Length: 133
Image (cartoon, rainbow, N blue to C red):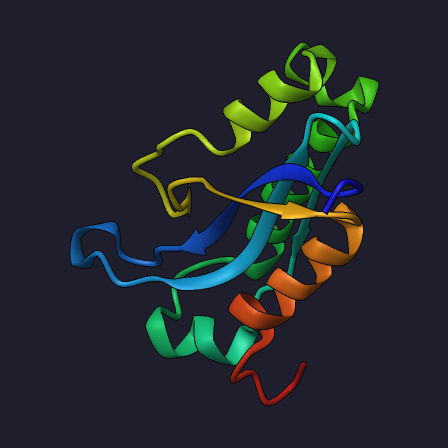
């Protein structure tokens, strides 16, 4: 237990028609202050997307999510947000939005390995049930 540190995460959701409030999970944002870790992992299931809405551009959605990845990495091309401290970048990424790509409320836990935790949460909440994962 001594090697475990706290972490926070939010699930990234795709809400194809905001007015209907239907969504499916497409990614995870995970942050651990003690381990100085912040990462985003995502994958949009194209078949699910088409079942919900055929009017959304998969390439544009992936590009938008890639910008979230750049922000989490602190990449200079992410603009001023990418230069924020780790915790502020996480808070910005996990902030409530009323758009097609949203984040769940944040959840917390304990882990020894944030990278493994990210992968486990991603498999459980995003890939679970995907036939092409």
